Image (tube, rainbow over all chains, first blue to last red; front, side, top):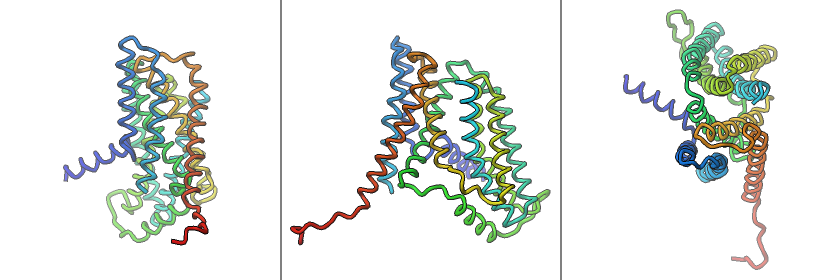
Length: 69
Length: 256
């Protein structure tokens, strides 16, 4: 019973945070991690990476959704 | 970010979710029992209030750079999810959210479900349907209001916007006693998606240590830029769909 509830809660959290396409969440984490590492090595002008991420991830995720259907 | 933009972002996000929750509560109350449905609403709102009370101070106590990195990442993921759905719907690749149809389906399911009494609750089905509707639709709004509000050190404005949206939607629902099918949900979703993605990208990069040119002024370019990008994607996907559905005329030489 507890395992079932824990599983249901895990599924809810996954659906809530990750949503329909895990690639988007993974891409955002990778982009922010990259900015963090670069910025902490003195490259503070990498702000554009955070815009490049949606510019790549959104069309890619849309393409995946359309292909699935 | 001005208080007006903060108010608008939270109000619109909350209004969209409130419209969806209203449809569920109306179905539970109409098909089953209003008292249990409204008890479910009250219990759901209590859970959301406790979530705000617990998470609010926790989020606010984070150091600003850590908060912006965490919140930026979360808002970027949420924003891209909202944009993805809104673009797919606007371009015809996914059915539009039809509150009337959803209401009819919920109503049919509620009418078929067996009755069950529990302590303090006359109809368990109506209670749980309303409770889940309010909590599930409200949780995302709580996160949006908390993260936007704490980043701007203006949780009261975010809270007022959230409550105002619930009040407006509830009042409209009570006035017409039907699901709010004419609310342009997808357009609202698109606007909120643009706001979440823009502010998520801005705060995420700042929190990670990057410096934006013109500082906060960069948002004046980011928000319209993201909006134009989303509209271009909608136009492109619409054209792609039209091309795919138009039958290719047979040519004279293609007899095989």
